Length: 72
Image 1 (cartoon, helix red, strand yellow):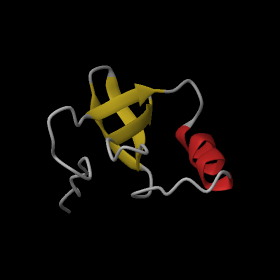
Image 2: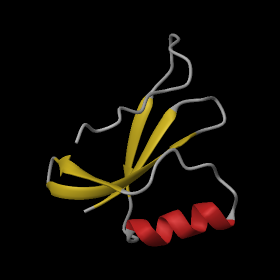
Image 3: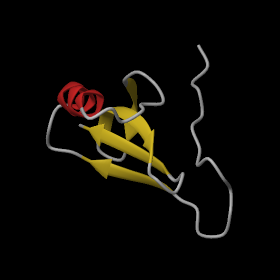
Image 4: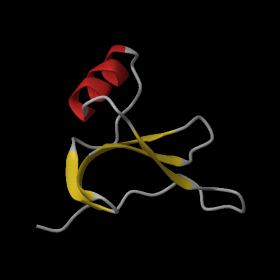
């Protein structure tokens, strides 16, 4: 299937797509975000990162920047 491409809400000077690598398993991160009512853009995805396969979820920060939270 075709992967959905996520992006910042608004493309402006200074907008960003940022990836953070977490030590916690991504399913635990997802549960914590859901508990805190943070909107999650998609279910957990699997892709290839610089160090191999990683699981990710995507959220927007308050300014609309795309935040990728990932775990190897």
